[in-house]
Length: 151
Image (cartoon, rainbow, N blue to C red; front, side):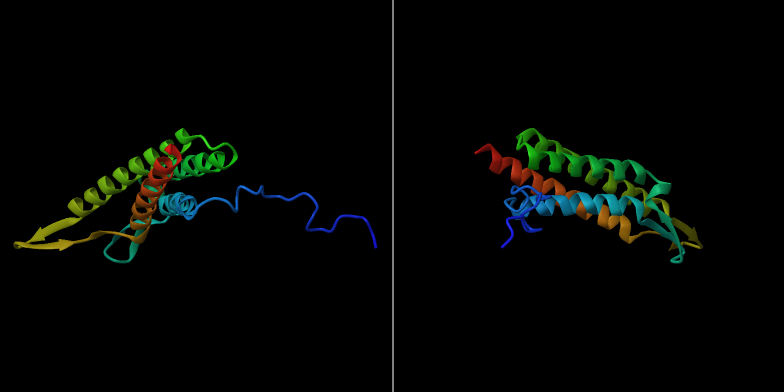
């Protein structure tokens, strides 16, 4: 019998707090990931075949915001300070507001009229919806975590 530690005992990479996080924490992380992926993904399609990625609009700022939110949640794991959760919730609210404004501009700007008939040539794409869904998920789950941490 060897007294050397087994590979499972040597230097655990993840602290015990990772497994102890509630489901809402992981949902907030998924929301942040949705913001990041949605910021790069297609936000609009023209004539149903040409897509415009979020990086042609303000997608890079959404990617940065998603990374900041994910970092705040990661820091919350190491040191549970409520302000980090509030910051992540605010980031979710700002990202959701930006997505709604962009969606509105795409909806209102992609129409032309010929002989009184309106034709839509620009439609929102799946990346913008993913961004909005991720932002709302981050907003609500980080808010719930901050509310719970208050107690």
